[in-house]
Image (cartoon, rainbow, N blue to C red; front, side, top):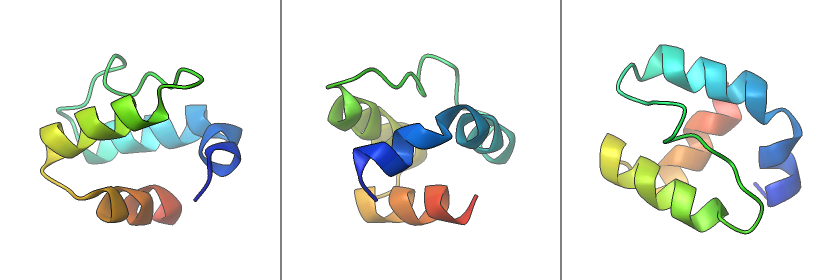
Length: 61
């Protein structure tokens, strides 16, 4: 999954992630240009998932 795919419908994906993982906040899911890796790192830490697992979860939404 590349940045364009991730950013494309991020607002919809963000809502679905918050439903699936109640511990996530808007701040955790803030997608800022050039900060994709930082956001993914926060999600990895908070959810205890690998980057590959996160991409799989986001891809299945």
